[in-house]
Image (cartoon, rainbow, N blue to C red; front, side, top):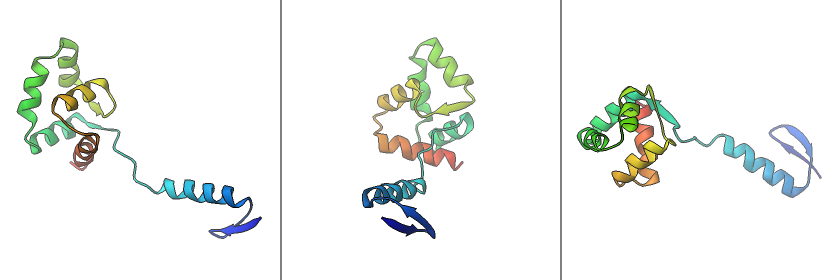
Length: 106
């Protein structure tokens, strides 16, 4: 079947056209923030009223986690330390996304 999509003619089945259009539509969807600078991360902790609680939690963690928290230039959302910290604070996946989105705007 021939079909014109956005001014371009394609020779495809209806299923292929539907899959193509769905894929193109997905390109315009915003992607979650993957990471932020240490400055953004810690300022967002402060803004959210979590800085003292996180600092206290970090103090109970291994020296490696403490060093990573203190000296990392970037905080990556998918890092295991992030998952452990956010789990300790009781955050849902949606709340973590919102935290990183807010931090990215700082």
